[in-house]
Amino acid sequence: MDIGALLTESITYAKEALIGKWMRWAIFILLALPFSLVQFVFDPKKFQHGTTMNWEAVPWGQVAILFGIGFILSFFLSGYIVRIYRGVKPAPDFTEWATLFVDGVKLAVVWVLWLLPVVIVLAAGVAVAVAAYVSAKVAAGPNIMMILLILLVLLVVCILSVIVMLFGIIGAVRFARTGSIREGIRLSGILTTIRTMGWLNYIIALIAFVVVTVIYVIITAILSFIPYIGWVLILVITPLYTIFTARYFTLVYEQGEPQPAVPAPEPALVL
Image: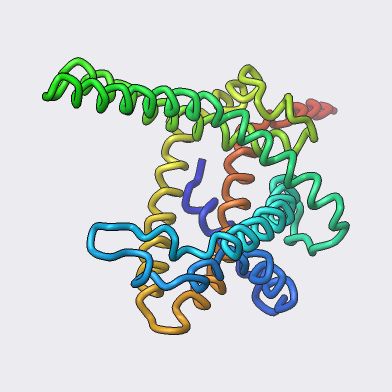
């Protein structure tokens, strides 16, 4: 697996998808806009006084409306990602919006099913933390066993999260290729894909992606400090990262697809 080639091809794909395709880029920005506007509906200075949180200062109605709209629009973005996962090249347009929405919802279901074990363990961890806190107050001192149990739960959550990412990424692309949510969570099929490309190759590919993601996060963090227009710049560059990510995972998945056998050449006739 040539990681450099995968990164280069994914970057080129993202650039060609948006550079000169200003309407497509604008649609990306508009679909992500509601979540970005949440920061402007309340004043952080009124929300926090020292260490005290003034929850009444939050306009919950406006926040709920923006989150609701953003939540619905996110399915169109997810549906677009599904099209990239299917190997469409060059990048597709925003067409057949109903299909986009349905595919986005299905992709969300796949990820919910993968994240369910993490959520269950995390919920158990919160319950244990609450019990530990109550126990400590009653006993007027820390409960060492409870603290150790909380740490164990957090460790399990971290391990589960890594496993979910390892299998969920391939599962998401597998769902897009097959159109089946069941295939998106079928462990045996996902394992076959990973074994075909090689576990070491797959992990190296994911590490390379993490490096790119860290660079992206640093860039957005820097942009966020620019007054007035920083959030706009983040909205503008995020579609590039989104398309790059979808294409990169697509190419990684394709490394695990069985390659057709090349027929052996027929022996030359000897005269």
